[in-house]
Length: 271
Length: 298
Image (cartoon, rainbow over all chains, first blue to last red; front, top):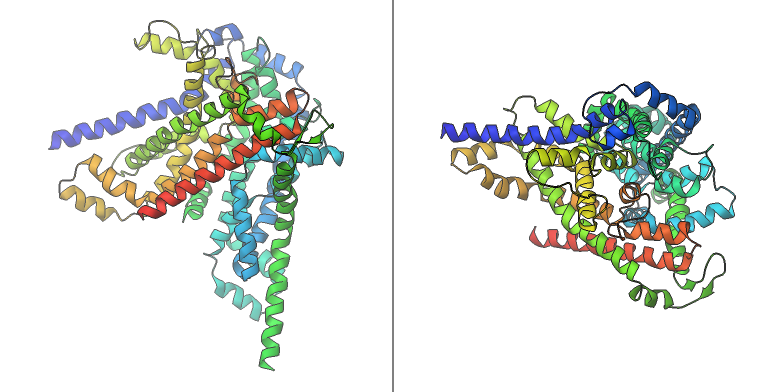
């Protein structure tokens, strides 16, 4: 009995160890490969090399790094803030001011969760072409701000918001927008933090829509640049790795800084 | 008097309700609802570029005679039929093990297994492409442990290219699903497991008869999300295959085909919109089936 319990535990550790190794290895590979030449990378070299500075140098000459990074940051942060602002207003509105009509609209909003982006991209592209927004960052942001999932997320979280707080504020004479801004937002900050992580990552990593809309090198985001470097006939993988590191660092940073909110937020969205 | 007051309150309630939801509802109408109907409308037209003429159901007829479409459809189906169950099962097993507080370094394992979720789809596709080159690190490792004798052409052989795509998606999304299960597991009363253990129920039976039934709503939710995601697969195949969906269209997905029809060649907006409606129907059908199946057994 004890022996089988022991071997069970060993098996569990082996399973976790293997899963953890496989999960981490590509990140390790990315860092190792950033110091190697393309030929070594393709050849499967798993030790640090001495091509790091050369790779960085080539990356910075081939790509206008500050501009590309700024493009990505601008699009991701602005789109995230806008998404969270309008979605939390809606989630709060749907939950706090219930009515038959609004509940029906809410069901329709949820239905759009099932709409695949592939079915939207052609009309959206035509729309942006007609309004002259092709190759602008506004065109990237506008469609992403409309997010049924984040509205759902905020409505679900609002169910846990203590209504006594709202009633008390009303007695004190606060207007609805004041209650939202000065009471709801601070109380729900962990919900906001979690939403921020999710939405920021989605926007920072957004690919297909920017690929369609952004056509000049001056407007491209880092994901697009990494993708185009890697799809060359003979990609210089050492250089590409510098790009993947730069593209991954912000999301890694956000994840490690806000890991707790992230998990908390997920708990809220499942319940 | 009383009725008047309630009426005023109701109006106040309603006005505020609409004001709060208006920005989102407006945006969703413009950027989600309008385009989906516009796509439907476009699917009745054929022609290249802006020269379009009404074609009725001509595009639908064209689908059945288009071998590339059939291939893209088959690939997409193969991807989610094979990949989603593997990933869900893996994620469940990982969550069940990670829920065991007596194991050491749990925090490290959780973070490590969740880590792939922070990689951008483009970045990890590129990493996988370099790792799975013919003389690359994966083939070397597999040969070193004696699993294969000669290198596998992950990016050049149709079968293995599909396997590579499945491996890649599984790597990226297993930890994501696991987090959902872990969160749900932590809400389950531990004493149920203790009781089962004392009664001598083996670990696999506790997994099958306690964990899985308790997590059914979450499993349903993640299965729907994952299936929808895989039906729309684009970033990975585009970046693993330089946008071609190769070798020999073996990894071409419906989304990639729509992209190619619209933005790679002279655009066939109408036909591409028709293909996109195949995705819409698939997503709707599978969401419905899964939802129905779960409710039936509840």
